[in-house]
Length: 310
Image (tube, rainbow, N blue to C red):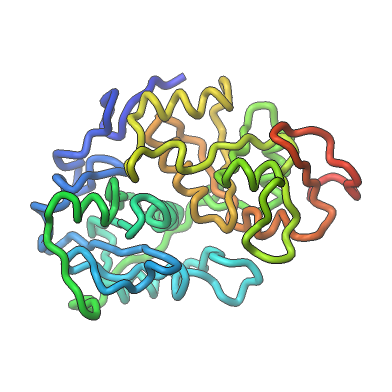
């Protein structure tokens, strides 16, 4: 079993300085001290992946371009929110943002680490490894007294040459989740709040059942952060192993596939490598259907289930 290594092979707090090989960031997480002196470098692209009320806010890191998960970076022909777009669409949107196959990309959001991890995971699922999440996001940048810009974001100076190369298994569907739930070597993590997981709080999206998948474990995404920053690698490893034991293959779910990616980021930092995100998440599984749902803090047999999940 791999030890609690950080993204650059260090223990303790994540390494965020230095430069990775071939122009890559040093790992999936960088700090403001890494990003600030590199602003303006020709191969660096900074993306604002804020969603909801923070989407399109008139305050950003200088030069940041919008990675619009609520807009163009979701497939709106699909019935579920935040569905991963296909590779052709993703390629086009990345080229419009001026991203090349050789670019270095840093993604942030206005909350801390919330939707930025979704953008990072989408890039990774499309075969792009030169991306990192800004630890602490815009709040950390602001707290450090670093410059901000306002007004409409400037368009990319030119069209990029990015090409999506999808990696199977990083974004999965409900059949894969059902298989993982039955696999003794896999763990399915739910990033929603404990109240939503147990079914004691209503779902924010109408029409969804309350509760969770039988056999899933609950790790609310905020519990692997402190003040909007990811916990050190050793503490992340402890949080995951406390629920998964010796299992090394993880599938992550949440409400609509966004904060599940925060758990994916945390597991990557903790040294786990067999990771998948359930794109439909509870927006799909929680719909009225034959898919089994249980309530309470502990999983058990699904009452009234019309059959096995499929």
